[in-house]
Image 1 (cartoon, rainbow, N blue to C red):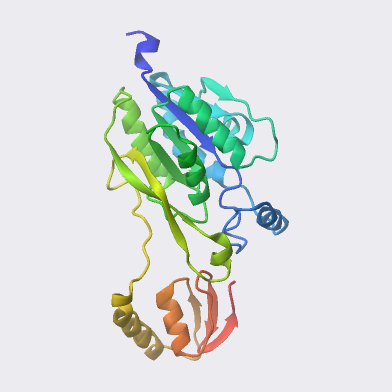
Image 2 (image 1 turned 180 degrees about the vertical axis):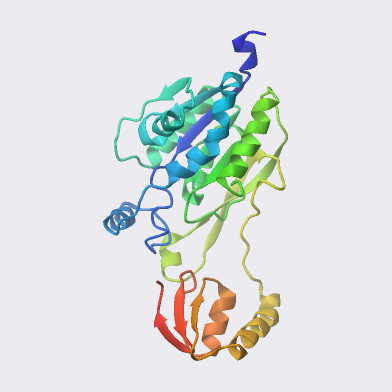
Length: 282
């Protein structure tokens, strides 16, 4: 069997190097140049590449079975070089500070190359850019690396993505089971104001796997209000004035805080000492 015959699968790889940088700095996202500058000033590190490398590591042992097309620099080539993954074609990215335009252009070139699957590392913003750039029904799969991941195109973890793609490669075919998945995005400006506003962008084609692909995030409907109230009431009764509590994001925890007279952050983390707020959006 010839080498060319073995490599029936063409895999495209795009890494958004700034995805997820706003998370650990409490900015709840990295969309927008001003937010990115602030994240960097607060010491944010570029972790998207690390997650991508974690997913890609199993593929290095299968490199003779697929063709890998990626981008130059931080958008793919550097990560492949670090883990010893062979690349077959490099899409040149001219700018050092990459933007969504680079992602869009890379997707279009990969479609022209007739890739079987586009693998990307990022969050909902990256997913939207990839999806909106597609000119056909090319399947995509996200390595979870962003702050916002409400879309159902992401693997449950980088390792899960690596396992799924490895299985596809080992089948030695560019034909694999697929399904449709929601592409969602969350308005980051509204999110920073503790308001949730999601928008359905469309439906992408992804590899099928009910265990390795995450379900889309959903929010509480009005008919669940009684259940939330009951949970909040129970939590209030358990309060110990000498204990310290770390309160995570969500509507249930906000209902609890409201019951004890505290204005918390819907999408941040608050700290209580008994019934007293000692740290907001930490």
